Image 1 (tube, helix red, strand yellow):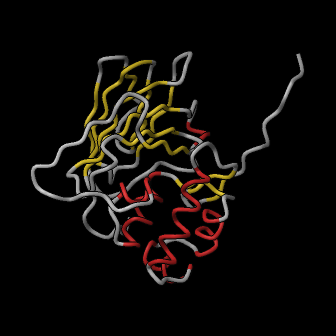
Image 2 (tube, helix red, strand yellow; image 1 turned 45 degrees about the vertical axis):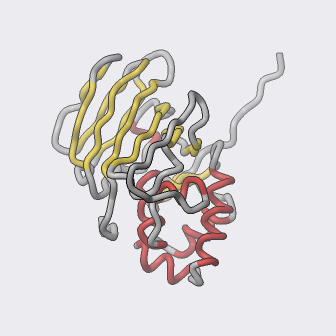
Length: 213
């Protein structure tokens, strides 16, 4: 059987990773289009997001894959709901609304650490963001640093084993059926510590103010 090797991964302290994984190509095109529709230059959006313009340029050209924190920053800089950045289109925001996401039909976006499936992506202005997440990271070496951003988070372990690393606590191992709620401004990262990538239902509070972290 022939043996294939993956390209070496290089990281930068910008909230992004090299070697874009599955789903990042769609993000690059969506970001470029939305930025142009907003009439912003790369530098103008970078100033709003608190990111380097070179970082945004690499994301738009598919040379880097944005982390969840970076996506939050970009959505805030564009004045958009997170769902709009995931899907690339305006979502409904009316009273008495309802949406159903069939199994495997959420919007998938990936980074080197996580593969996200956004549920209820058709609705904007949600009070929380539900994500069915596969944890690809196997150790803290897979993260340039602990992630921190505005809001609060909750996750429930569906399968596999998760080790949660946080800024003020010792690493905590969670098994299927276990859950955790925490402050997102505290540095955090989830690692799959079992034999297979762990799967969790991850719920993040809606970020309504510009991100400054």
